[in-house]
Image (cartoon, rainbow, N blue to C red; front, side, top):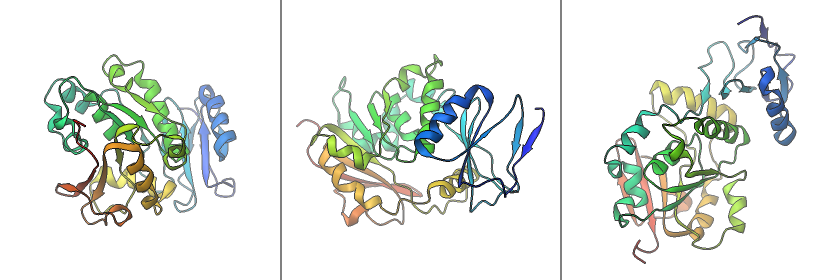
Length: 280
């Protein structure tokens, strides 16, 4: 690894630390120029130690072989990054009956005639997992993610996927936009996509290690979507057939709107707001 840079609390002047190895420095500089953050350039094969920083005050975006979000502090979980290649679920969906997936049923793939491709707008893309499932099942997915750091993870994951024979055909159907959905929706025409899919951040009570790790990093960086209700009106206007909202089991309806129907699972549910059938 070489020398390790131990970042002192007195040095970390910005909430977001943007750390870059030499071959990713220009990309990191562009990110900081557009989105802010404190740039830390690593030399050679240097590593970085963030254990002295306070989790409630700082987060790190690391530009290395992959772009990753890193929590800080003495007991910080590992890095969170987007990796579409090598995804076991994609392999299964491409070679099996994937329309049985809950998210596939929720967006209505089981109601669409064979050979027809749905256009889906994912207004809260996050790490892109649901978008990936839908793209693997043949949907054309436009993704919006308002947080610049999370968006950078998605962009990096899509870039690496272009070099993977296993998944490049799937991610080719995934288009990441550089805007927040609410802002971008003003330029979108009424009923311009078949389905709008939303999965806003909400306080998560799951105790699984994976959820803990990712939620800890995400909550530090972006918290919950306290303004999530504002997503509903533009989503309903832009959708031609339905709006699908993924929610934890105990979460209230988005914007107080009662769904047309629901699909419930063990820990969560899909609230489905229908407008017109897929034959119309």
